[in-house]
Image (cartoon, rainbow, N blue to C red; front, side, top):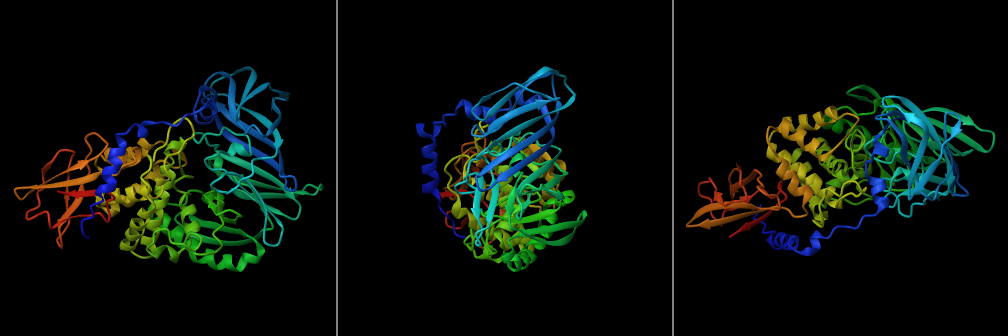
Length: 550
C-alpha cells in the first residue's frame, strides 16, 4: 500500500485539541448524578434476585405490576435508592407486611426502613407501580416501549432501553454495576398473544380475565437493560447446537407469516456464528438459559438469551454492507453482531456506561473474527479495515463517569480497529485467541472497568499497551507517525496526546518484508537499511494511524 498522508485531517485534529472548545464539558444535572453515580444509598445493598411481574394493557399503552427485590446488605443502613422513571406512579413499597415511606427525586426513589438493616443480612422488599411508560420513537436508539402492530394488524410490543435505562419501564437498581444472580419475569398479555422474555419459559397461565401470564426464569446474572418483554402473535421453532458445553437449545420466536424465511435465514447464520464465537471467545455464556432469536418491530438488541431481531431476514445491515467491501452481504449482521454481545456486554458487562466501548468495541471486532472464521484472515482484516469509513474522530470513546454518559459512537468502528491493531502488535494469533477466551473466563458473569480489561490484556500479552489504549479511548485524535530524513538517515517519532506514547508499528521498504519498530515521541533513528523518503511504507492497513513523511 502506498503511503497515505492523512496529515491534514490529523493535524487539524491536533490543532483543535488546543482550542478552548475541546475543553468545554457538558453540563450535568442532579438527575444525571442520581442516575449514574454509585452513592452509599446504592452500594449499601447487593441485588440477588428480582421477580418482575407486569401486566401490559396494550390498548391503553399502560402497564401495572410489581417487582420483588431480594438483596444482601453490604453495610448497615436504614435507607436505600432504587430507580423508576417519574412518569410511572408508585402505589406502594412493602416490607414484611407493612408499607414503607419513600420520597422521589427525578427518576430516583428513596426508601426508609423501620430499623437498621444489618451488614451481611439478606432481606427483601416489593415495589408496586403502574402508568404509561415512555413510548420509544425510534427504538432501539430512542429507548422505551414499542407499541405497534404487525402487517396483519395484530398487536406487537417490545421493550428496548439500553442507555436510557431499564427504569423506563420497571423499578430496579438502574446501574450496570449490580446484576441479580437470577431473575423471574412474569408478563401478562392479552389472551391470544404470547410474551417472549429472557431465559426459559416455565409456565403459561390463563388468568381468566382476558389475560395470559407467561412466567420466564433466568438462571444467570443479567444486566438490567437486557431484561425484555416481547408480545405478539408469535410462532415457535426449535433447534439445537452441539457446542463446547454440550447441547445448546436454539429457540426462534417469529411472526407466523415469516416462519419459512426465518427457518432459512437463521439456519444459515446461527450455527456458523456460534461455532466462530465459541472458537474465539469460549463457550456460549448462558447454556442454562438457552439461545433465542425473537422477531421484533425494531432493528435489534442484545437482550441476554433472547436476542431481539428485526433485520427482515436479509443479509447485511438492512441489506447494506457497513464495511463497503461487499463481505458484509454474505451474512446477517443483526444475528452476528447482537449475538456477539452475549460474550461482550452480557457475559462481561461494564460497571459504568462510560466504558461502553467494552461492549461495542469488542462486539464490532467480533464481526471481523466471524468473517475470518467463515472465510479467511485476510477477509476478516479487510472487513474491519473497511469499517473505518464510519469513524468520526469527534470525541473520546470513553464517556464521563458517574453520570450515565457513554462516549463517542466511534466505540464501534474505531474500537474494532483498535483491537485489530492490538492483535497485530502482539503478533501471535494463538496468544490473541487465548486472550479473548481468557477475558470471558476470567471475567465470567462479572461487571468490569476499562483498567481491568487493559490490565488483563497487558499481563497475558507480556507487554504494556496502556498508552496505546489511552490514546484511542481517551482522546479523539489518532496518533501520527512522522518520518524525517536528514542526510539520508531516517528518523521517526509519534505525535500524540498521551505523554510518553509508544506503540510498535510495522514499517518496510516497498515490496519488502515488514519489520517492527518501536518509535516514541522523540525522534530516533529507524534501523531499516536502505529506507528512504521515497520507499518507506507503513502498515496503514492494520494500523489506524496518520503518517507524515518530511
